[in-house]
Image 1: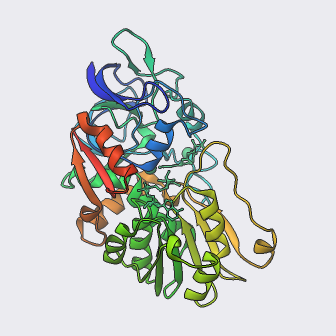
Image 2: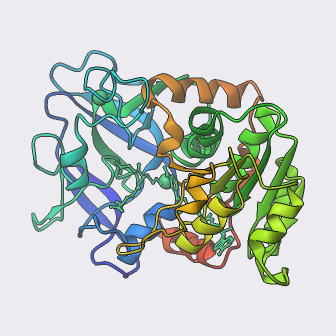
Length: 370
Ligand code: NAD
Ligand code: AHE
Ligand code: ZN
Ligand code: ZN
């Protein structure tokens, strides 16, 4: 079939909206009509050329929601008409990682997914002249139709709005999951969140759910304050306005350091500040942000010797096929909020404008509605 997609032809160039060819699902695969997709900073990271795994031409996008149109041979858990959310972290339920309760990082298809192809080593997308186009994070939600492995789809209830629940495909789950699954934040904790964007605000929302007593937001863009407060931020710090040492300021503000700190910026200098503003003896710092190729984190080992720990999280530690339908239920039951964070919607033709808004710090989440 033919479908419409925003194609990343080369690193650093705007996406180009065009007709592309899409082959039908092979064994174990599913054809999905994407109804809506969010624009995550990770898409921009790869588009820009910062991603060491980035390969082109590719169809980016990993925060989608849609409807199953067709299933390949052997697919048993999904049928045409089912509503689904694509999973860049699949859940095969049988690999060593899926069988280990300590991780959500299913590795069943990680190698081919990272190479931009389906598990059989080939792409389903191509240009009209036949040139193959790579998949991205196993999802490619910047195409109106896409093919995914069955294990990379969460089946969700069919009364949930696509243009909101697409955000659960990355930002909502990552932010809330970092608090609940990874950090396992206890009631009454003090926390600091660095970066009040599409991920950081969901960390704040997760902290409020967990009953954190103090939620400090840190951002260089003061226009994020209002939204931070709306989701539970108790204090705001703009590093540009702090005279002297930022770590010292944060440690004082949190009465000796935070029990939990979260980086949602992708900046390795911020990651160091996040670690060092965690409480001596027990503070945990969780890295969510994705850093450019070649970037490395540093700190004095003394920071760890004296009881702070440095950890990371992908997709908020969530097991997608199991956890994502529950998060959709939370949204539908009003336990979590999504709508105010979706600040801009646009047709696929305007997707580059969505990335411009992200760059200017004017949007929290832009969503393309097909
Ligand atoms: P975003 O652009 O919406 O938000 C980033 C925020 O960080 C902005 O508000 C910006 O003003 C702020 N910021 C930038 N530099 C800062 C600094 N020096 N100090 C304080 N604040 C600063 O991006 P997003 O979609 O929320 O993504 C955030 C990061 O999380 C990105 O690196 C993204 O790739 C990553 N991410 C990781 C996962 C995961 O599973 N680990 C999932 C989704 C996104
Ligand atoms: N390709 C990058 C790594 C990118 C990365 O860390 N991705 C996160 C999800 S970000 C979603 O917005 C992730 O899931 N990581 C685990 C994995 O297996 O990729 C690089 O640096 O090579
Ligand atoms: Zn993402
Ligand atoms: Zn697995």
